[in-house]
Image (cartoon, rainbow, N blue to C red; front, side, top):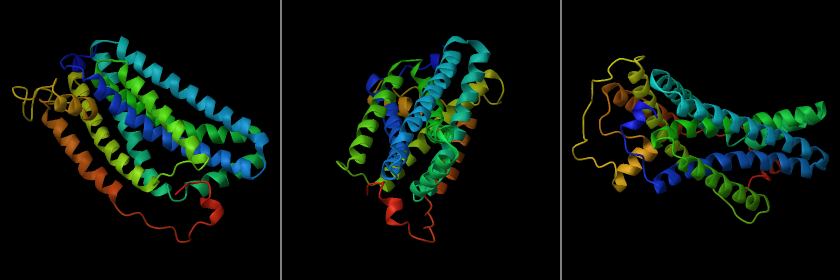
Length: 297
């Protein structure tokens, strides 16, 4: 058990399920849209023979993500002392960096992702089946690695509980069902609003993971100010209350943060959130009907 996690009460089961479930829903739907575009393109191009290579790439990516998650989780749950804090802190910072890059990339790429993916898949088809599998692998693996690192950083605050993983799988399961329904036109989702609101959620979650990583590195002695607290609300902040479990379990809030933690959290929100919410420049040319037909409104 990490020293950082040991001094806090693990958040409630419902909180752990909700937080990780929402992450799984967003990341799973993002991945599902990518797979949906690839499959729809092959079906409309009458290249169903290449579908097996897409699924090979998707399956390989999922296996890689599972190995990455298991390796990081095993390391943080079995190693103790300073090494555990270092692993936890570094994994949290890496998760924040990747999540930030992906969230900011998605806000600009969403409008053209369908055309870009189909162009890449068309080129891969011309090269050969392994190129198709590799293209699907990287398209899905990019999202999967982000999810694995994000959950590891998020779940550290749950005291190595299994509930965040269960919540993630439930969220991914819901996303898979929605993707199938979207493909067959049974449901429609306003992706712009969905990714905007969940993107804001991920930015706030990432800020909490950043603060968590800073605290872990302070405990490990890699960062100064481990005993320089910004405030201490432990006397009235009840970590077992509904608000305490939500703030602690989803946003990694602590009643006794250090000054460096608060500075890191505020600086991250002040920089990343405006970048994410700033207006996106519209493409110079409107996408054609064929470029948008695979994405429901």
